[in-house]
Amino acid sequence: MDNKKAWVVTVNMGYGHQRTVYPLKDFAFSGKLINANDYEGIPKKDKRIWKSTRMFYEFISRSKRIPFIGETAFSLYDKFQKIPGFYPKRDLSKPTLGLKQIFSLIEKGWGRDLVSKLKEKPLPLITSFFIPAFMAEAFKYPGDIFCIVCDADISRSWAPLKPAKSRIKYFAPNSWVANRLKLYGVKEKNIFLTGFPLPRENIGTKKAEILKHDLSHRILNLDPKREYYQQYKVLIDKHIGHLPRKSDHALTIMFTIGGAGAQKEIAMKYVKSLAEKIKKKEVKVILSAGTREKVKKYFLKNIEKLGLKKNFNKNIDPVRDSNSKKRVQNKNISNGVEIVFSEKIEDYFKDFNKKLRKTDLLWTKPSELSFYTGLGIPIIMAPSIGSQEDFNRKWLLALGAGIPQENPVYANEWIFDYLNSGRFAEAIMDGFIEVEKLGTYNIKKICLG
Image 1 (tube, rainbow, N blue to C red):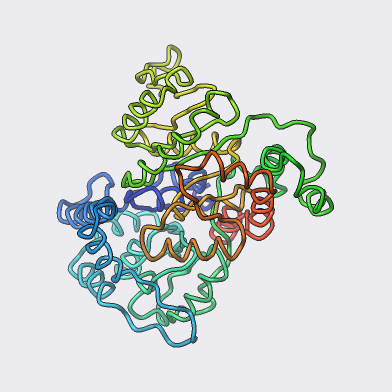
Image 2: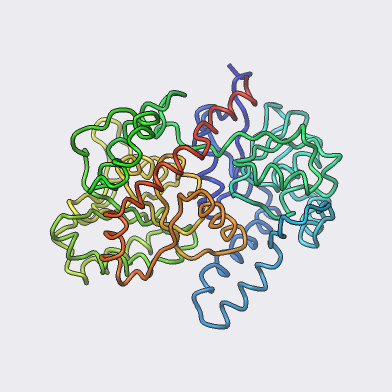
């Protein structure tokens, strides 16, 4: 069975890289995902480097909200991860200053301990962050090294110093990334166009029976006047099949907050605008707080201020299950407002994916969640944070699956105008048809056969 397993390595810097590998947990060795920056026995020196990087990123992400000073600081930082224009096509293999600094730290031993531990059982190594891949190659890891790209386009930092001589293999979520890697000098034979690894519990088997079931109910909610269905019945019948008479859930919007806790204020502006419709049970709202207690408390406080306390059952502290004696996180459940929160990241992803099955619209900054439009979920795009998210936004717009947020203060107006026009239903089909949905299965086949 060991031959059918892999080391699955990530970093707990925000949710993006961890969310990317969560669907691969079942074929991770011992069912465990390894955080390169926070594993058992990590040397203090290594952890200090990782910690300073994480703290700086989170500080910069949050500070962007501060007028002038924060925006200036973020702009300077973003230059280091800036993605150059694709055209004209040219050789972009020259390493950046930031990339050289990363390799300078690796040459001094950063990551040697992690790789030495993985060498004890040289399984295929799959990582969602480029630095562990660089470490593995630098310290001569004997197994295959695979790197999953989790954005629609990437900076030069994702490819090593000498990409033409590297044996790192890349899983590209779309053709943009595949072509970009070639410009950076990565050999074509080391690039696999797999699609992003979406959660299998939201797809089902390769026939996508779960996905199609959920999609058939979602499209009813997002095309209430059947404007889109009347024009594209043949397309819907071909890709989804026969639609049920009635959706199995109320119109539901999920608002997600990134790992740094940014943009929670924008989410509450939406909720405030939709408050009356929530009270009338015309719409349900899910607030995804992740693993941040402060964000959850912020939501609870503002829900009460908006007079939505009656529509919300406050969270009960974790208790012990009488049978398993394990701590169980009780969820925030109500008719109109719900919060997704868990202390552990894997519990959060599990609950998030479950709630996603009955989510009709996903409001988020254009992060790795942009690829979740492949599940047939329109993305309402909050403002981008960083160059890579600007390109994710561009990609979603090109597909027609992403819709820029209008003024949150008037969400109770424009969201329903989009509903009645069939625009959201169109975004469903654009994402579902155009985006590769079986990335998890494709990755497993390449790595493990």
